[in-house]
Amino acid sequence: MSSKFRLYGLSLAVLLWSSLVIATDGGQQVDPILSYYCERAGAVFDSRNPLERGAVFSFRARTYYMNIGDDGEVVRTDSSVTDYFYSFGQLDSAHAIAAAKRSHRPIHVDVVNVFTKDYHFYFFPNDTGGEDMAVGFDSFSAEDPSPVGLAVFDRAEFFLKWLHLHYPNRERYKRYSQSYRFVTRDEYVFPDSIWEVSARRGIFSTEFLRTETGITDITIYR
Image (cartoon, rainbow, N blue to C red; front, top):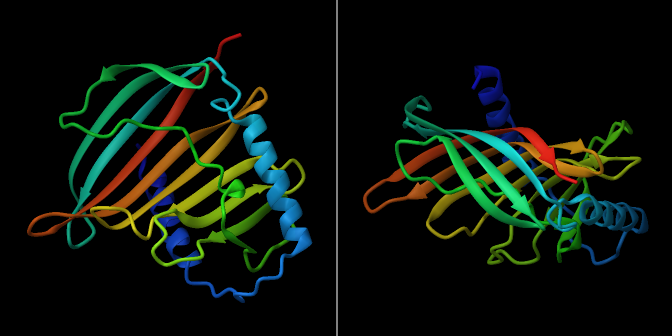
């Protein structure tokens, strides 16, 4: 995977973490314009989600696993190439083309529809009025394990383009975040890139990890 791709993934994680410190007014009044955009984006998410629609499809995922040292340098790498097959919204099988040296969690494309969850939503500052709209979402409790973050969607068509998630209370992790980039295929929206950045607690130390996945060869079967 190119250094440009790795740098882009890392910058997205930085964007996510920085977006979380933006203050909100904490009021209970609902902005009708914000509600409209969230409701439309949530409805389009479900209507274009291949898992919700029960689509039959496949894709190839090329994943790079990196351990990061204390100075920020990559100290160990691993990689895998896997073909995934889905039928009627469920994972049928995963065929390893090139297996990783170590055991890793499988790639999941079942992205949560944040617009239908119980969140405090807010417009992201500095909206340029362009084709993309950014909406932040935060939980109502500091103990809530749900992810918080930022969603970017098409202002006119409402389909999701980017999703940045931060898990403030993920078990065994000091920090854990994910970023997704999406593409359209026929009437569906698929993630084509996934980044994960984490700090995982160990017995005597903390392990810093970065995972980058590129999804290609998306095929929808009729």
